[in-house]
Image 1 (cartoon, rainbow, N blue to C red):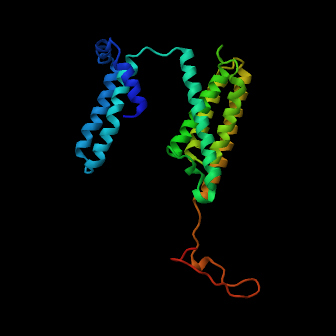
Image 2 (cartoon, rainbow, N blue to C red; image 1 turned 180 degrees about the vertical axis):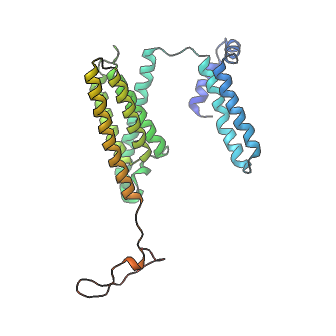
Image 3 (cartoon, rainbow, N blue to C red; image 1 turned 90 degrees about the vertical axis):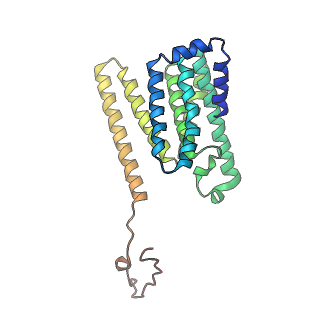
Length: 255
């Protein structure tokens, strides 16, 4: 169990109405469905051949059973409280990117080997997903501003720009895919709010065209980098233009 989940569970468990909460949770169809899925997963582990990994999987996922119990019986946060949580999360991720840049500056790319290793605490994939969440949340808070977000526009826009730049520094393919997909869905949603039919249709065409061009460029670049022809010795030139013989140092018939 993580520290965060432990704190949430303790806050939930010290409530004097804990028995009422439990009774309410086990009458909730969503909670029972989630618990049923997890139970099937645990039953399926009986047929595993790797019992060591099965025990580890159970140890990791059992604390997740607390989440539906906690969230289904806890009073929802208000709008102001949610926005405060989001802002706190934005600041934490922003500080994590600054720390990663310090790691890159301190250790250097030559020592690290790849910029993906600048995410020291968690994997670069999970870090990229957190960054994408912050970008989406920041855009939402910028578009649908609340009365308590008077100054958010002054630091929200630079945060979004910096995090997009940082994703390119991190070079996370997962982050690019999630960011592109999320931006496409958000763009379609915001365009659907346009009441004028002509402007809405033009906006749809522009968004579809832009993302199709961006996707084709991305796929072409990825394919060019990932799929390369490995020539054999028969495909290599044997003589230079001056008639001198090439000396090819091949390894298993490849470069």
